[in-house]
Amino acid sequence: MLSSPAIITAMRQKKFILPESEIPARWYNIMADMKQLPQPMLNPKTHEPVKAEDLYHLFCKACSDQELDTVNRWIDIPEAVREKYSYWRCTPLVRAYGLEEALGTPAHIYFKNESVSPIGSHKLNSALAQAYYCSQEGISNITTETGAGQWGAALSYAAKVFGLECAVYQVRISYEQKPYRKSMMQAFGAQVTPSPSMSTRAGKDILTACPHHQGSLGTAISEAVELATTTPNCRYTLGSVLNHVALHQTVIGLEAEKQMALAGEYPDIVIACFGGGSNFGGLAFPFLRHTLTEGTKTRYIAAEPASCPKLTKGEFRYDYGDESGYTPLIPMFTLGHDFQPANIHAGGLRYHGAGAIVSQLLKDSLIEAVDIRQLDSFKAGLLFARTEGIIPAPESCHAIAAAVGEALGCKERGEKKVILFNLSGHGLVDMSAYDQYLSGSMSNTGD
Ligand SMILES: *Cc1c(COP(=O)(O)O)cnc(C)c1O
Image (cartoon, rainbow, N blue to C red; front, side):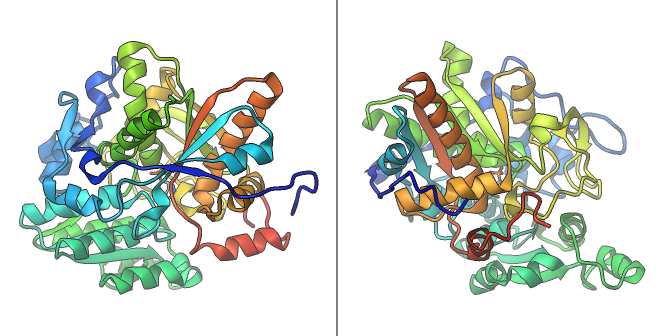
């Protein structure tokens, strides 16, 4: 497992970047081009379709409106957000020669490197947009929950950029076991509270019933939502699953489309790892628009963990977006909102359901899904590190494993396909996971 002695690997790559003036000015709203729109989100109490106004007390107005917008194909990126994007965008598109050589594949492999953002993942693309809209609407405080801490770190940074106060509820067990993202959030000035806490009614109730509760995304969401709805000028934010989050992430695919043109190629296969669908949608939707409107035959593959397989083994039905049942009912592929995923290192992929848009696309066979076991993901991630010089996030390792699988399929069949995958983040805060893999003590289920 540790090394594949037959393969001698070396690093080699070539980078394509766009000038700052070419950073997209608009996001792409795929709902304007979908022939089968997702079914509406439902109010959990009345079971009536949700209207934007129903969301205003929870999310900022702009994001609530974007969430339900099925008409406007292009949505302007506010100039202030675009300017902040330019701190690290355009992100590199890289031809992974080293990985191709190690695999001996005739396929051409490209990756879009979202790990170069100030917090190390794609999540900042939406965090900045959400924080900006809040600031414009006179909101002074934003809140969220976070598991492993990637979304909390992104939101803490974005809040500081736009002068907002940020309160993050972090699942207690992650707060204690993965202290570095907590430190990142605090470094950017956020208030981080392990959940359950005594600071909310919901937290007090949980701790009274169960004083040593380890916390879960469910407890953290309950606390963040309670804070947002009981504090004046405070709103709640989410880092995945919802339509407006995927919309903000399309900056990834829109750049990649132009960069692939610089490289003189067009992808046959587009791959991303899958938690709730935001980095997958962000990379895939801009390419999918050509499939929807011009019939291009590109394949789109979402790579999920075998231990949390909502796309490959879940059921398509209405379900809550959160464990406690606070959110509207969303039409989604789901394992059930009370599903308890194994404790794998890819914390960002341990989510029970898929966003409404990607769920509809999968139902209509416009996209595909594969499930990847934890050990296979790290094996691929390590090969990538040794051939491309970047240590990938445990989540991103799933996309790499899927890309490696496709590239080896091309080798078997002698096909020269062009493969593009998203490197959603780096793994420099996840080195304990690599330690475990390298020492041979990792399992597929994380126990
Ligand atoms: C959060 C996260 C993911 C999963 O979320 P999506 O919304 O499915 O993109 C993937 N990779 C990284 C690095 C993350 O932080």
